[in-house]
Image (cartoon, rainbow over the protein chains, first blue to last red):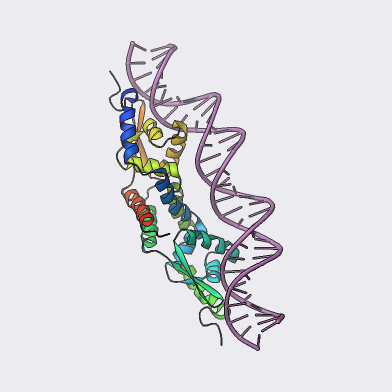
Length: 119
Length: 119
DNA sequence: TGAACAATTGAACAATTATTCAAGTGCTCA
DNA sequence: TGAGCACTTGAATAATTGTTCAATTGTTCA
């Protein structure tokens, strides 16, 4: 009797092809991953969470995240390049804020996933 | 006249402290990041997208993602350890499926963020 | 102008992570 | 039982990524 659940020899060409057609392209997948990759760092996540409470300058962000101004600045560049935060200069300071409405949602999803996890 | 936007000498202790109190702990932030870190890889994202269409065995997932069975298996372990997919054995095969309702939502958020980006 | 502060950048190093390959386990069926 | 398939694992290598420090840019104000 053949394997009734997953007969590779006969079905994978069809099943594989079907799934391949419905899946996003490698380029599109890469772009989506990029957003998650940005949010996958602890310091950057803290920066985002701090900015969700209102705009803040680099010095304050370094305070809040327990890191250096230089380090935060590097992370802010990555966040800017990925349309997650935006910068506005006021005199000597640069005030950062959240660029995009659904960064709120994405981060909230992350928190929800956390709270409903059972170990 | 003092800097009216961000007078560090006088305000950062207060502003910094306030933000520090409202932000999640480092441990909590790390856990949230972990979810995003898992979704930040192209192969894993493809696996998740394939599984959003229905359960699938390792062989098929390797087909769909254009990678090796071994490579996919390593990624599936990471996905399992982070409660994103679950495994069920049927005879020789192991069928994988999405473990958690809001993986749908999280991935959809990622796609939305992508589509409303302007370059 | 120049001194002081805010932020950015680049380069070097350290740490993490993905991929590969070979060897292993678990299951089925002749 | 043992041959063959499905999958997993571990170790080694290659590639990416974060952090640090020193130097640089941009701004203000005396």
